Length: 296
Image (cartoon, rainbow, N blue to C red; front, side):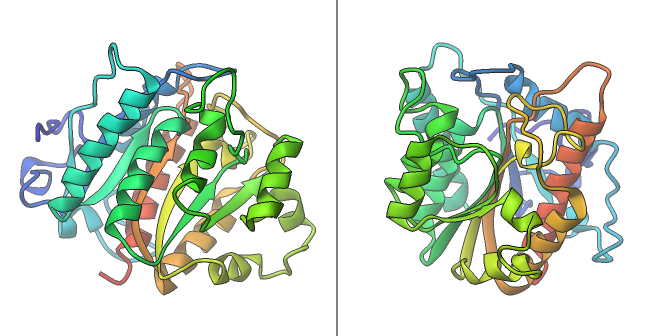
């Protein structure tokens, strides 16, 4: 496994805390972009997150710890998807993640477009029993195919649903009627952003999400789950999204009562000279790690 040096790795961590052998956490950059349908630039997402992470504090004041130095975080060199089809790319990422899980690592996958999330989801489903897939997203991504591809970013959760129906969605606010029907027919637990705002799930909606999750949880976080007024640098922004504090509250609750076994963060499309989205995505990654290791 080839590691990134301090000038390019996550959080700019010194070698003694970022070597593969001694790190419990591994960051896998997958700058995959082949099926985007609106804004482009997700292939630059992993690099944007890694670069912005150099300005994220090591110390988490909420949890009073420096996780990076306790557990070690190794960042691997980005995957080169040149001359790979979407199907082959997903298979390639799957093989990488399986190897990392076999080595006992906690795997963070950085995208890239959302279609690649099928790979780490499949790998974690094979490694962990009693597992729920928690999807943060503006879109259901349950179309059977989109623009001629069953591996489109708009179809990733349809492919996941072929592996498991234990899917919980949070922040959804854009879908076609076929996706709505699929959710109802397959009992996909979907927490719509508008219904969260209207207290349709009760004032403690986070607890309702929590009650929908099994013991182990894999999180697939599309950054367009956030409201575009808060995080604009994404290919398919949708108004009416989630904000930071409510999202962190939910993630902390999950970390306290469930076991987060892995996650991916996808669909960041960095914009030149606009750093807030990149930094927010980088801090999201570190907060997710802190919540995942809350009891470890």
